[in-house]
Each structure stands twice: as structure tokens, then as C-alpha cells.
Length: 242
Image 1: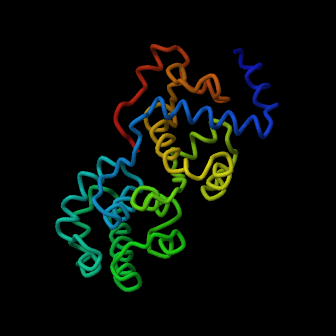
Image 2: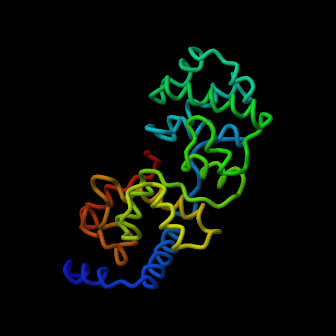
Image 3: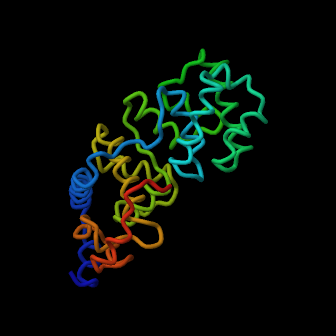
């Protein structure tokens, strides 16, 4: 479809048309990424909470290399809360911003110990009271450790939904509110995984693999990256890069 015709098509889109297009695109995402899941390794809600905080500004693979030693040394909130910060810093240093992250994870562990009986709460309004825990982190934990639907608006999610024309919002909380209106609540967690996987594997920030994207017919941003299939195919990443 010529670029001008494509632009006019999306400019005239109705609200119902947007909902139908968004859900159609999600079905394609489900077919494209049938194995989409949280790429942080964890055995319990506490581990996922800490790992998600550590994942800021680094890759999930880097966090997964770091957390085994951390959890071996501090397997419970009580033990992490009582840890020497310098010892924790030495373990998590490879994840970057290790001093701030140490303060956050010791702080959240202290909050779990003192206010929640050493257990990770299963409500968003409780989780966001913990140091270093915002809505994104809370929704990761709720969706993947408790089965409570939530939208995880990280940088990949935000970039992809704006390119899709599902929203023009930049603020993560507003993005969350806008996307929530397009889908059934039960679909939120898996939608988040698919969007993040798509952002990491095809819809890159600098050079999206447009010519190798199954969503091209429904994407108003088609053409931001190479459209020649062979060129675009070389941009697809099989591994997770945050």
C-alpha cells in the first residue's frame, strides 16, 4: 500500500476500528510469539520482585546471571533486609546502578519484613508502597507470580504501542490506561509479554525489521525500518535484549 494511502487509512480510523485492529494485531502476535513469557528467572514472588527491580537499565539475561548468587546468600526478605549493603553491592554490581538498586532491594525487603509479615503482597496498591516498586514492577509481579492481569509498560511496550497507533501518550500510566481500554482484562498479562518480545526481537528502537514483520499490513509506522525482506530479516533477534 502506498505511504499516502496508508496514512489516510489510519487517519480515518474509528474507535471501533482501532479496537478491532488492535485485537487482530494481538492475535498475530500470539501466533508469532507462542512462547512469550517473562524472561526473568524466579522461583517465588519475592525473587521476581527483586529481579524486576534489578532489571532496570539492563538486560534480563544479565539479571538472570546475577540473581542466583544473590538469592543463595539472601533467600528471604528477612535475610536481605539485614544484609550489609556493601556485600549486596558487590553481588549485583554487574546489573549497573548497583548502589541505588541495593538501597531499593534492601528497602523493599525491609518493608516486606516489617509491614507484610515477610510475604509479597498480592495487591498493586500495597506493592507500590515499597521502595523501588512502581506500577510496571508491580504489574510484572502480579501478572506472573499471582495470576492477576496487568499491563507492564516498559520502554519496549510504550514504543511498540505508539508505533502501532494504539495511543499517542508518552506517560507510562496514561499508556497503561489507554491500552487497557482496547483489550479484555484477562488478556493484559500475555499482551504485555507479546509486545515486549516484539519490541526486543523485531520492532527495535533504531531500526525496526519492518520488511520481516507479520504486523506490517496493520501498522501505521511500516517503513520506519528497512522494508526489503532480506535486509529486515537480518535485524531479527532471537534472544532477549532489554
